[in-house]
Amino acid sequence: MGLAFLFPGQGAQVVGMGKEIAGTFPQAMAIYDRASKVLGFDLAKVCFDGPASRLNSTAVAQPAILATSLAILEAMKASLGEDMPSPSACAGLSLGEYTALHVAGIIGLEDCLRLVQVRGQAMEAAAQAQPGGMVSIIGLQLEQVRALCEQAAQGELLQPANLNCPGQIVISGTAAACERALAIASQFGATKAIRLEVSGAFHCPLMAPAARALEQALASCRINWPGPIRVVANLTADYYQSPQQVRQWLVGQLTSPVLWQQCIERLIADGIETFLEIGPGRVLTGLARRIDRKARVFNISDLSALESLRSSGLEG
Image 1 (cartoon, rainbow, N blue to C red):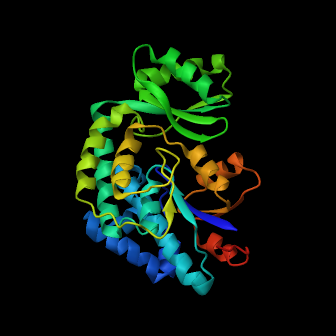
Image 2 (cartoon, one colour):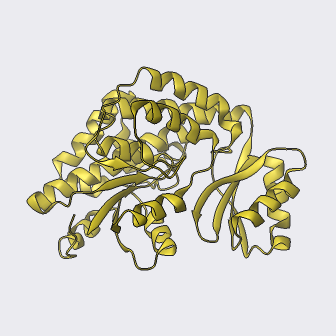
Image 3 (spheres, helix red, strand yellow):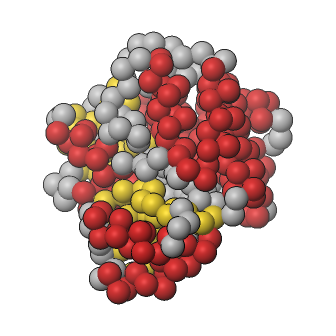
């Protein structure tokens, strides 16, 4: 039975995340301690106690989610011991792809934290320089969403950014184009259009300045190849095959759509039957169930979920 680990992206953060697990498992707290040294501030304090305004900033949320996901993973290892399941593959949504690459042995922890810090800061700066937004469109297929974007753009930038699951596609572009999309989405048959609480237009060409900064950071990052676990990339819904692809596809991910539905479908086609979401929130658990109702899906976001995993019969 194939098992894949899934790791969440930005938006999963919440004040208090990881606090109970870090207080129970020293191995989990050690992740926060190492992260704080690399980042230059007390990450655990922000994750555990807030304030929310700081945790929700792109520059802080991204390393915070990475560290919390890894802290939960370390708690799993300590709790399950020899019963810890081994994944056949990993995937992560946007930021979560960095977590996946670390867990797969391809990028070391310190390098991963530095990359995510650069990425978050650069995305925040790009968003301030070119204000934009993101809107979740519910109930339309991709071609309908593209038609909506074309009409709402009016010469500005607006495009699909996250292909999450059937009937749920996020679009990204200028602030004005997003407002127009919200106003006319129902005319295209959308059941709902929701403005996302994000600082900018992620996964579209407005993030080009951030992509350039990330490219520079990746050039000096050590890529351990090959890793022992396969990772499916957001950019292509295909497996990384070389260090060059790691550098190129992570840069491309910033300005291109995240093909999440296709990533999950690729894993299922390759024999994955069970998914384990590790990290704050339950977004990926819900998406996996919408993509394939037959998939076995588990979520580990806190201590109670970890305790229930012991009796779940999960096997790698």
